[in-house]
Image 1 (cartoon, helix red, strand yellow):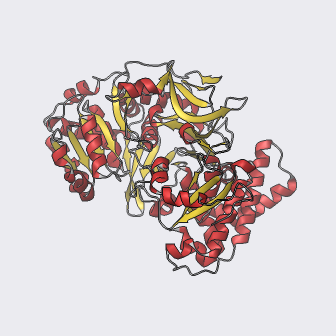
Image 2: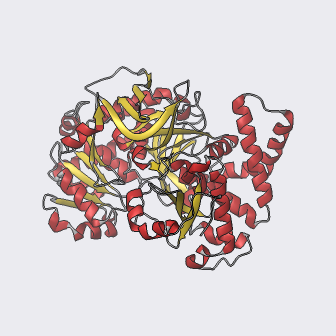
Length: 609
């Protein structure tokens, strides 16, 4: 059994709660710009002192409306400034926020509100209200319903002017480190969502230690900044927001990824927070844009040289010839991608799934260090992360200060430390099952290198055992295939089957671009594309490339292209775009069985059928 730990760098303060982070930030740098609000083509600054003023005003409004200490407030909104404003206002009022994904179905809204015991809910849009309204009769405990887009936050602040500052100060000091800071529901990829009780100490101690460990990321000439575009309802972006208040980092928001590049150009962040799919899309879009301009070969050569240069630099020896090639392609290709990302990005924190070494080295060659990390809702996001001065591409880094990671005999990753949640809400059985001798059982399979850098190889429950007894981690095959511009999602199957197969869907955004670039009809339907010989040949190449990374017994022998999208709306993806494997296996059981009907044994390389 292997175990690595990193001692805490900051002494714990059991009495501190999250509100203390903002109070201390205002005291230290009241005029520092903490947030920037989108304003046409520009951004309007919000200083620490102004943010605190708005937080207190909204907290007073919540108190005036009847919110009591310990009350739970549901929040359903996309990523925007008001999300964090409400978050801190709830804490200052002594309340507890229960995030609801903005894409949640009415039944999910009902579950989060009823299971948590929420007494109020804040919704962003009329659409969110309509979904809540469908189940309103089933959530009688919800007495207050507010809508952001109706100006209800301003109305609340106006209604709270009679509440004394002393009352807000009293309420914000009620919670200590061991008290609940938020109740976040898991994405439900393996069943009914469970409420994770995260404490104030989880956020405070992890933020204070991460600030020291990630000092180079959180400090930059002219000030560090980040543009958030992943959902704040997820613990990853939520924790980073709290960390930015602690560290004095400027934060902007752009929830619509269609406008991500223009926003990055004007905001000019110094670091990014993203999931691997975003990095894949930026790369694939750049490649297809080059292809459309007749420069696809140049782009791919530039990418190969860039990756080779990054690998050589990591090994500590870049030959003169490679260095000259890199400088040439940097001037021709790479600098344009760097500029498209705002021109100032030095770091990118990636989580939720493995990025893969190829993309890691590609972005590193742009001067962007991608710091892959690992964590769960149950670990307040990061349990491990690569550091600016201690990083290995292809791993998720060492434990963050204050945390320890252990590999069990069966390969499962176990976590202990300041990041680990308190319990599952109203579910003592699930809580007891989640721990082993005080260690959180993550359900993930991983391994350490000699330096304590963790690599995640798959989910314990997702390991496929073929009829021949071969254990296969599907992520090792899925991730490289998914990096192909044509591929939307890929699901590897084959449990108790004679060989490994896969379900593949096409990326509807990239499909017409790829078709046009490859001399095919860009207007063809998804059904037509799924049977198109050129498309199938490209998918075959992606599958064969993935097969080269595994043994013969683990290779994909057949695949089926589904003429549809796997989305969150269809019930097949979680809000962080992870696949709901069990649901997909059930919904497409017929397509899976057809790949094995009358199937030959395991002869040959992958055969599309």
